[in-house]
Length: 451
Image: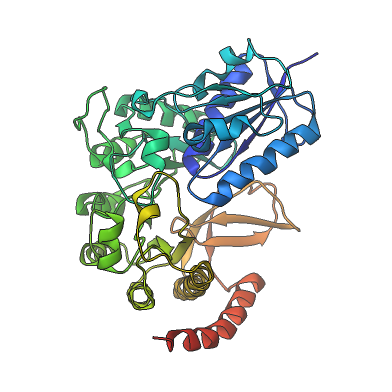
């Protein structure tokens, strides 16, 4: 019987890059890739554990694998697998659980694995052993690739389990990253997204030591010289690590696009200190101001957490009003959830779950408002759009350099190419969002009155 493997990835771009690397390893070992709902010899589930929902999703996909092929081997890897290996091993149908350092050795583990029906085998390291770097990039999308440049984190944010799941901050070498970028370019992929846990900390652990051999600026300067890559995006980067020089390089660059995603987490300095973030709102404002100064049409995305312990109604309003005042483009809003082995889980001042949900809703409304304002400001301008290959209802979609999603009638000759277009109008989908937004704003005015 032929060997086949199916993959499902939960969580961040970094996980997608690593899943692709695992898939290439298994392909080299003789496993043909199939979809997750096909009968496969082995199912690989790469997990996240940033939120409670991600843990529950793991169970859902184990059930999917068992339904597709009850005799198929189920292997669970990733952050959840490192943090809670015994918990996962008790899930019916799981055969193998691999931790942070073991997940890149799946082919060798499979040689010794059979469907026994007994409790899953667990191979999970002490997180202190996760001190070496394994390079990865994804090529599942024919338009763009996620390129891993850094892993782990030395920050001690009180809500975060990532250091426990991925270990210390460490980096790939610039030489290897540039070589990977060239490999990606040779496959005809036009866009690279740089990814990692804390990419602004690039250079630490580059050659196995704890010092910075290079900086993030050194990395992006080198990548900007790679031929054959049309666009490079910087994924999430901490505001204290995004330096003026990096912003100025993007402005002058031939390949880096005007798109930044900068986590804020709270617009209250009180809450930022409780979170043990490494900046205050004044620095965050300076970063946004600098971007707008040199790149006035840049897209700026923001991560924010609502319902953190100690976030009173007044502190939430500080966050809302701070975000409202910033010239940003969109928000990613997360509802705080208690995670085991974090400082925040033991903090006083827990926010009622219903209130957390309501605050999330209000910031999502603000996000839609910011996005529509940003889109309206871009109407009438011309940008190159990189069209994706997928066709949906006779339409094709693509993104401008500053992350505006464009649509046009599908043309197979344009799929995977870049076309200069003029942004003429918001789509019907956008108009629906505007309509829903107007209805929600009046409800929010009532919410704001509860001070």
